[in-house]
Length: 211
Picture 1 (cartoon, one colour):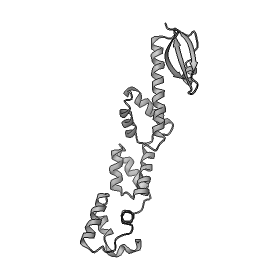
Picture 2 (picture 1 turned 120 degrees about the horizontal axis):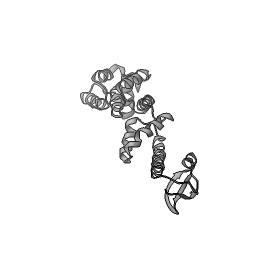
Picture 3 (picture 1 turned 30 degrees about the horizontal axis):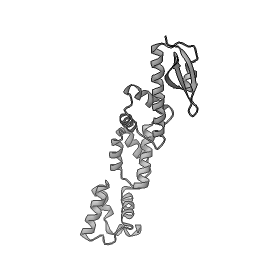
């Protein structure tokens, strides 16, 4: 069996280069070196070599995955999309997701809460659009309903008024003008508000207090 002839720790990273029979064979993390009690003179079977290489590949992917996960909260589907984009071996994807869950970086309910809070706060998004977006992120309907019930967001009419004010600077006063009504109606419809909500917003005497 191949024998370890040198173990050289890299200067800038916590990694160790493993030499077998005088030739560089592969690199592993310092942690893996200690866990497997690697030392000069130790013989390694082909199976053990493949195991060490496989673990090193997984560890490298995990470091990159942590960098991606640290940018913001993500759903399981988003991580799966990342795996496909990076051509990650399907055999290690579930173990990697399990590691993320263990350290609190993968939680569908927490992601849904974060998403709703962000979209309501910064985009005044109504429940209809929130449901569509969360479903597109792979979140189950029962989680969506639970999170939306928990969220103490303003009413949809108030959200629509906020969206109008943000878009036009202030809510238009010539609300009885048919062209103006259509412009507001089309705009709010595109933003995911229902007809009944838009109808309430277009009730002329309810707008002035929001300017």
